[in-house]
Length: 447
Image 1 (spheres, one colour):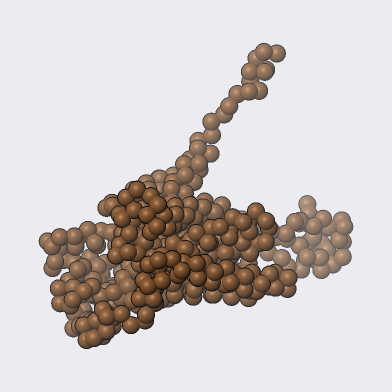
Image 2 (cartoon, rainbow, N blue to C red):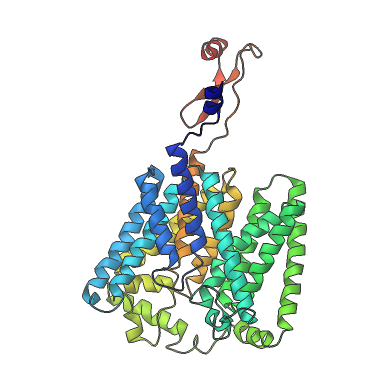
């Protein structure tokens, strides 16, 4: 009896379960560490590298749907590698190319990870991302109002940058968590309404205090696209009504938050200054937009590119246009590969997001955010934004998973439906195929 009791309380260690727990932890930490990029290498590089190594060491599949992504990433990075050769001895140039290869590897990693066990892994990754966004937002808001020690280290030119190096980066980083918080609030369950509403309020305040014009437009455009897509894919009239009503209420709430912020000392004047479309550094022959024209003309004469950090030696500043920068740092090879990567990701991501899957809301939010990042690329260099590659990888992984997703229908006993033409289920390893089958076929399948 004693032996039996001891045996019943025995704990079995499962290596497979332990491996999966470690995978989940690394995936969550990778998403969470994306907000802490004030050092080089940042915590993100450390956790992302550890996650990539561990996932591949314990088994990670590359499916046929990943091959176009893999091919275009290799072409893009080879362009940068060739362009850096003449200037490889200059400071930071080799490191820039190395980081480019690493960022591309993270995109492929996310695509492979999300393609398997999609819903659970997406939830884990986005949970870490959301936690990072809330922490970064709270630090940014508290620092702006000097409510924490060392607040000035989290500000730049009077603008909140939080745990990032640049106010123009924290804003775009917060867009996807903001959309996910909006979706949570749209459920209208009391708990989700409170949590989602609180999350989006904190995120929006931090985004506004970053005083990034691009981030403001990015969030507004991505939110409109996301809510519009949710409305279009919904087949429930009540849900559509709820979306419209919640959108109106949400816009009213954001207006109140904006009015409250503008009433505070110093916020209104800086907001008015930053809200002006024409800034002094944008205008003129060598201003931001003038440099874009001259830079693309220069790209026609430099098929192999200039290499990293060389554009600023010929012009007052960096390109501040990721598409121009891809030509400058990667030649024609990288310059053509980058926009092709963007277009392929948009197409594959939209196809995957429009499929009816349990993870469709997350993909719709990711796709809407990616469009905003693509648009911001016209006024700022986004090629080393970590969350750009995360968004691209998630869209590719979600698309691959959606293409293999089928709704499983329970088996029907032929005894209850003996009529000819009975719809039968013929299972493959991944897909359930429904087709008419004769009475004899149904009986044979049942046995």
